[in-house]
Length: 296
Length: 226
Image (cartoon, rainbow over all chains, first blue to last red; front, side, top):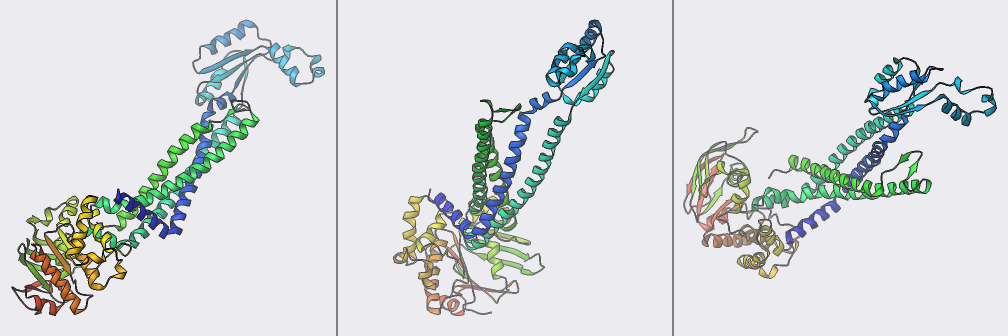
């Protein structure tokens, strides 16, 4: 017990002695985790909403105008057996005309009839990777007039998440390396200031782990403190964003089809990953310094 | 207790610190190792402490070939050897009591045992009344006494002192050597590396003379001759 208290005291004293470097190390870890957290939560939400984004990817298969029910049925049969399709819906030319009336001026359409619009099938795929193949297949079906699909918003979301992944990954690696460097320097300074103690322990017959433990704990304390700060700030920010969504949306936090992951689930993930990352960085930073500078 | 069998030590830099040293120190013996700077005294101590490895020959300490002592066994090996430094190496932020207790704590001695042993150790070195003094409040001789108390805390079989009187006046040096002699009389083997002629001449113990890495003389009950 005494020894544990003694080590704890030594850790705090040494971190305080090299205050500037300690604070810089904590701040770098904090910054890195903050970045990982913000981008990570963004990516988590993109993945959470992937089904919704999938729904944005609709394929419209238009049937040649004037095709009879038999020809429409033939296309239906070809599509209904296709196991790439998740959702299939038929829209007659009458239904299309009714929809058009909601959009366009009724006077403009008064002299026209439903026959000017083609009937269509709306298709949603199980896997968007087969999109191009499916469009080629649909275009090749008899009596298909044209196949239309809008991938812009979907592709935008995908490319955004890809870029977020790359940029946040790059920045996290950069800040992670920087924090490792700073932690190992903080621990190295601590070792330099306690060189006599290390020599004494070494000659007295203290085990390697006993000698190294306080230095390892210094790195872990830095990582842990950085993680606490990052968890607090990220949780606060996410809670604010979530509450803002609640006031704007329904009880399901539904805005234009977008949903957010609940605060509790997010905070749990952030808590676990930040502490793991922070402690890992702290331990590894100390390990580098000890390996390089402490010969027991 | 200690057997150097044709021991050679060549450092990476190419310096040949010890050359074919043959030496035997018996259990319970008191011996001085003397010689000019660079003669190999410190290397001899480093080899005994297993801080360095011989590049040739065999070194036995307490019946163990030092080459057979694995890395994880070094702490247990070193617990049986007490070390006294010239520059004391007391922890300045700890009292005399805490400095001695520190040696016991880092070697996993139980708290109750520590509370019992530390006053006894301080009494052996005659510093019980200064237990709560900080190193800065103690004289050079008193600081070295604390170091000796710390060195014998784990009841070592061997006590090694590297220039223990180097920073002390002649009278205090004599007191320190008397203390080490007292410890030797209690059964501990004592090996003292020193430049201090008067001490060697006063105590008339075994003198091992090193010069350029070789044992040039080994005199029982000898005097300081280089």
